[in-house]
Image (cartoon, rainbow, N blue to C red; front, side, top):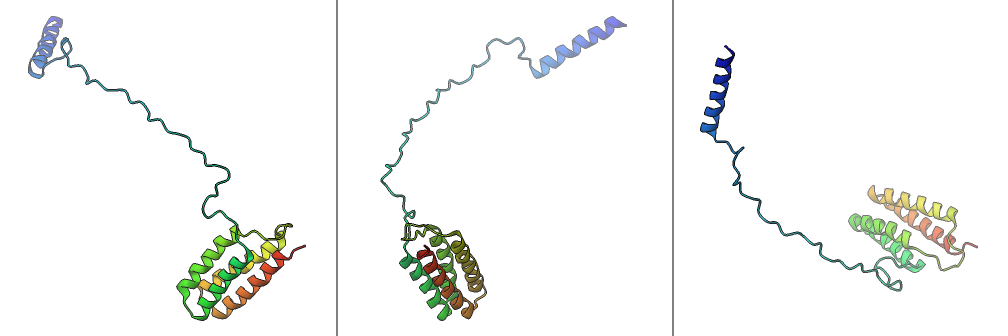
Length: 151
């Protein structure tokens, strides 16, 4: 009985190998295609000179900020809301680049009031509140003078 099972098993394995093909004993397998090693391309580490200024990183003066506030106010008076929103957003960018001309620097209290006035201006510009925008522009001018003249 056992010999019949063994003979049947061997016959099955032989017939499977005949029909499907077996590469277990085959020595002439194709070798993989040659691959050229990749050498990384050399990159130079370029550091800019310390005297070079990156564009857009220079400080703004009071006059430039006042000019931006004036543009917001004139756009609101003309009810040109797209220009008003754009100039309001640009004022927020310009506020971060502002450096007062005095050597004392900026007072945190004055900066906080300037930031709250800017937030009100931005909300009024989005809601198209012309009297609120004009009032906020006046408040920003006053806060800017306070920052400039801070002892």
